[in-house]
Image 1 (cartoon, rainbow, N blue to C red):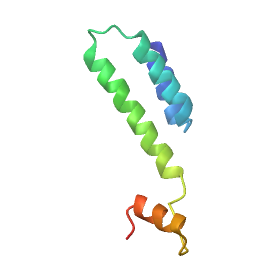
Image 2: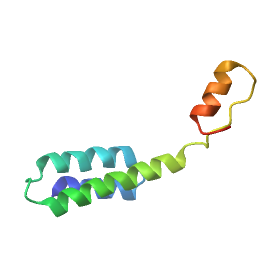
Image 3: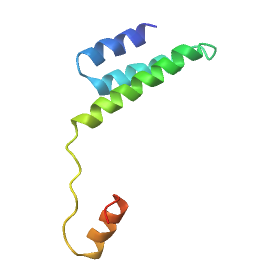
Image 4: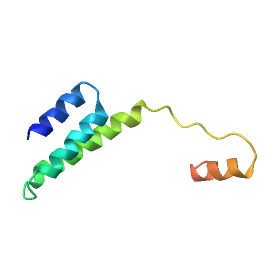
Length: 79
């Protein structure tokens, strides 16, 4: 799978979003009976998403006493 190899190169270079695009394209091109390859490509996408999430700043706890802030805190699991 040429597109999988391209995705892997993009992953190695740190371009995780482009790697996801290539892995997704590889899934679309992969015959349905190649379940192991399809599963591996989905796993690669998951790894890329994990890397992207690690680059994001951490969530900050909302501050304030307004009803909106209390709702946001509750929806984020704060009590």
